Length: 141
Image 1 (tube, rainbow, N blue to C red):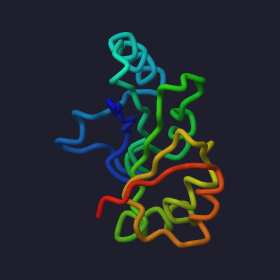
Image 2: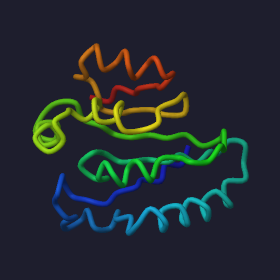
Image 3: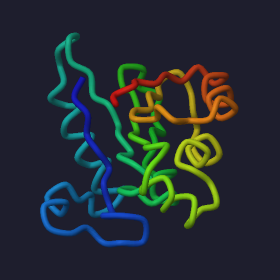
């Protein structure tokens, strides 16, 4: 799977800095244009293209909602990396009143095409809401 990340900020309410700038997605429209170009090149049954809202830190919640898949292409998956503990999680809690996985469950359309990564400390109650929607998770400590 080729993952293309939607990446707009360097932290919650902070601009991209230094090396982060090379990953910048200038807009949701530009991101989807790039996805269309990549999809045209994924002509092998062994290659699929995945949409990534990188994180609460790197994709503002309002933009993340707009950048989630709105197409019914069954070969595409969605992935997001959402830390559930540490400074990034605390920053999310201070800004949004919810930890990253809570924000994900509350704001984004979640289905069997979504895989969340780096969420090892998510509260069981949040996991139940997430898993009821047939979403997957990958634990990468």
